[in-house]
Every structure is written in structure tokens, then in C-alpha cells.
Image (cartoon, rainbow, N blue to C red; front, side, top):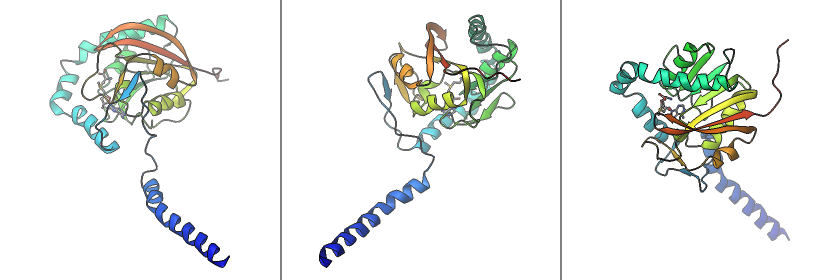
Length: 242
Ligand SMILES: C[S@@+](CC[C@H](N)C(=O)[O-])C[C@H]1O[C@@H](n2cnc3c(N)ncnc32)[C@H](O)[C@@H]1O
């Protein structure tokens, strides 16, 4: 009997000892997003050895000085009217209002934010790994730097850059107010660029990921290589301030 007890104790201590490296790893990387999902119509691209490698790859392009010069000069006025037309259309559909508090996710130098402000949605801001004040603040879309229920409207044309799509969507649903609207521009009929982290082949994975929202519309658009606009509304009653 004594021998059995000693054996059990030894096994217990050994398993405790063997699990120590995993405990250390968890303590070192508590903020790591969940493991990526992959299904038939949403494929995570292989090849990112770590989260840092993924972020570095995104930064390589976003911080490129020559490209930044082009985005803020030649490219600046080319994109703003196109974004403005998309947003005017969303206003016509009552999905966006001048009074909306709006966020543009992955806004780089903020052309979409400038477009929102020009059409009267003045309380708008962008978020990107690299800030571009005053239009764009620094933030990772897998871990948005905003409290719950902050925005009435969120726009993004960078879903394909999400290494963890469920985290990307969960953060949108967390920071949207109840009844808030999220509009995504995605590429379904062609593959996005080499900086993309996933490939989307239909709207279905989005519908599954937006667990706390209802699908409002899907329509074709011509948005800088992205062909489909998908709009969701977060479930819940809007809260009116007294
Ligand atoms: C194709 S660009 C889109 C720029 C902008 N929306 C436009 O249409 O001009 C993708 C942007 O997503 C940003 N990005 C990539 N991964 C990100 C992340 N994890 N969090 C926030 N931004 C990210 C990049 O820095 C880059 O500026």
C-alpha cells in the first residue's frame, strides 16, 4: 500500500515538473491570440513563424518611406472621393450618420478617415500598427485599444491582413455599441496581396464569425482591388443618453 502511495506521489510530482515549461510559456505570452481557424472558405496563409514575424511583415510595407511618401501625396486625393462615395451610400441606407462615432481599422495614413470627416462624420478616427496623427492612432486590430461599446460604426478593408480572423471580428463586436454597424470591404473573386494573412472565398465565414450581429447586406463594390461590401449590425437595443 505504502509503495503504491509513493508511486502515485512520484508520478504526480513528475507530471508537475514536466508541465512547468508550459506554465512558463503561458506566463510569458499571455496576450497571444487564439489559434487561427481555417475552414473551406477561409484559409490562413502558412509561413508566419511567430506573431512577431507577422507584425514585422506588416510593418515592412507600412513603414516603407518611399511608399508613405506616395500614399500621402500622389495617392492622397485619388482615394478620398472613392471612400466618400461608399460612405455617402451607407448614409443613404441609414447605416451611417453624421452623429456616428466612427472607427476605420487598418487605416494606414487615414484616407478613409479624411473621407468620413469631409462628408460630415466628424467624430471619426483610424487605427493602424503605425500611427498617423491626427487621423490615425496606434493599435493592433487583434487587441483594439478601446473600451467596450465605443463606436457606432466601424469600417475596414483589411480583413485579409488578420492572422486571427475570429479575434479581428470579436474585437469589432466588443468595441461596437449595441445596434452599431460594421462594414467590411473584402476580396472574394481574386486573391489579395502578398502581405495578406488569410484568403476568403465566400461571405459564409464572416457570417459565422459575427456571432453577435446580423447580416444587413452584401453587395458588389469596386474598392481598390476589393470586390464585395459586407455590412453587419450588432445585436442589442441602442442605448439612448438622457
Ligand atoms: C492594404 S493596407 C490598407 C490601408 C488603408 N485601409 C487604405 O485603404 O488605404 C493594410 C493596412 O493594415 C495594417 N495592418 C496590418 N496588420 C494590422 C494589425 N494587426 N493591426 C492594425 N493594423 C494592421 C497595415 O499596417 C496597413 O496599413
